[in-house]
Length: 386
Image (cartoon, rainbow, N blue to C red; front, top):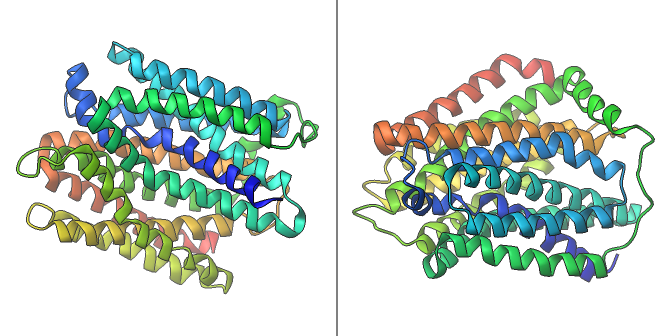
């Protein structure tokens, strides 16, 4: 595969996943525009994550049935349309509905592009191509908050979504012109049977069950932090712009990049040690995060620890789930990421409620409680999945 095509897969995956996370640094502006209480504004992120869950369960498997190039084009065009709708919506219920569809299509495209890249690559280069595409997802996650904050300060939160709608139209044209046409479908299963097989995997795959619950708790802790961060930083005494708040998303890059070594350690049979260390870091991170009102340097340290622990868990989880070389990898990733979507949505709505009732200390107490629950759950179940 030419490097230009690999780069296109990575760029497209990053642009797609970014749409799911643009809202986080903009929640205060959206709340003012629609007069949504602080305790309820996390519902915007929850609606997006509900869309993610629906995509993983009902849309991502379509890549095994339909020709992927046409599927990606259709999804990109639909995503551009719904992003434009988000930018123009005038009522809170319609906004929630539009955000749900944004999460659905953004997630479907992201996961579909990863599968598309794997199918397009030769056997000898598949790891490189898929790794590059996953790297694009990582960059998209990091830059989403920065881009949203920067555009939001200049053109308002609606401008973020209108600009992204235009970008997705350009991306659709590039995907149609540059990506290869593959054979239709990779399985003879009917669509209902394909969906049923995912549910069967959830029922039978013990490692998926245990590691999925760990992912749910870890991503819930993540979103407890990121969904609430905009609220204190945009208020006195900080009064930070959306650009400055979004830039904190880049701070976690050091921790997340360091976590890539967790995969190598897991390959050596050290999954238990990596998981224990990562869960302890996830719990420890809330101590410096709680000190944010007195030190922004403590906030920076906490973000690095949070991303290091969380990403190390994520990398180790995926390595263990896919270890058996199953022919159902696409359905396994859909099932695993379903836990992620549920955890993210629950964390977001609980976070803003905690902030409304107990301030930043309440947010940190909630996050540390979830992280402690993850550690205790792994301790009780590690023999079932290791």
